Length: 86
Image (cartoon, rainbow, N blue to C red; front, side, top):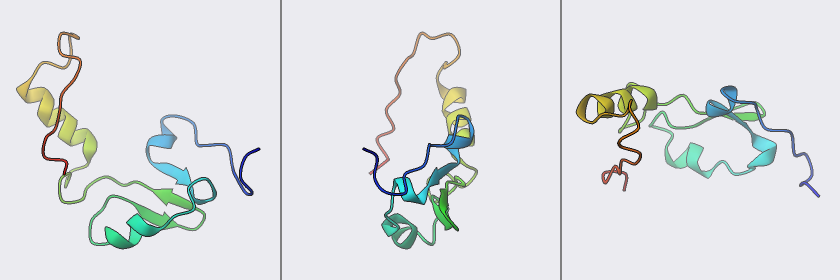
């Protein structure tokens, strides 16, 4: 059975930006990365605003920047590895 308090996850595309705290009851990253904009705890859910040290304009803008360097549109490149992710 699902853990106590488990809620159905948000549907896409909202799930890109939110997760229920009850489904992932750990706030450690919100403390560790509090000076970065990766994850925030709001009420009963986590919010993923994007940003942080690697993505100051958000992850979508970062992917767009990669798309300026390599062709992501025609499917000829299917995988890109970001070796700077730690």
